[in-house]
Image (spheres, rainbow, N blue to C red):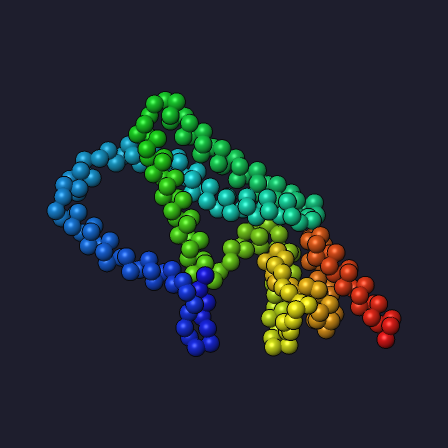
Length: 241
């Protein structure tokens, strides 16, 4: 993941630039193979119509499997870690079920081709799957390079959670230099937002963000416990003043 500093320089690694350094060599190699080898004639002799016919079903299903996999990950992660209401649990179940069904269909297509001994289709399906996995990796690398976190599937499945997370992240960033880093305070990741522990280390911020923190803690059991403990410490300190 690369970030730009105040001086305009970007932190390593520069993944996109590293990949771009390979393009001239790849273009030269492709040009040489195309001109000096019988590759063009061999490509022209391939049964493209049969290949397209064999590739379309796995390509259509496989193209849906890539976003379905992201939705499945978000859904299963939320079901395993968060406290969800009935509507959110239903959306998570629907995303998990649809993703699992799509992957089962893709697997059945491959098994059916093997059972019919149609090795040509098996080869095409393998190439399609490899291309889709490479595409998914490239998209993820691009998102990391641009410092874009893949929260879009959460925005669709759990919009309220994401609105709360974004508001809390803004409230943390608004503290700026007023944040203190001592041996008694550390920062932990809670559903994609960094929060101080203990929360009452910044009582002013805690008071301003109490409504959002309470709603956000309804999703995260550990944060709910930390928030209750922080409020008890604040009440005790006020009682002794």
